[in-house]
Amino acid sequence: YKLNLTIVNDQVDQTFRFMHLDKDGAIRMDCSSECAMSGLLALRDKFDLAFANDPDYDRHGIVTPAGLMNPNHYLAVAINYLFQHRPQ
Image (cartoon, rainbow, N blue to C red; front, top):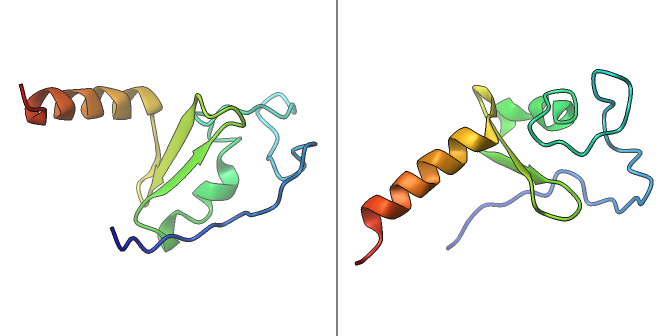
């Protein structure tokens, strides 16, 4: 697809020291949390879209120049798109 992709953090760290602390001071793998996603949010003006996921890939976060997108809103739009454009 000739996508211009950039990996912003290629470190593997089983202690998750790269994570920003959540509101309560805990490390939380919640991609819908602005605290947990603050590192990627700081880069939002450098990319059209930025994606992150938790370690077991069942949650995601999407950052745009406007900020952090609510994952549930994205899923609703994606499902609507699939229903509208999926062949019968």
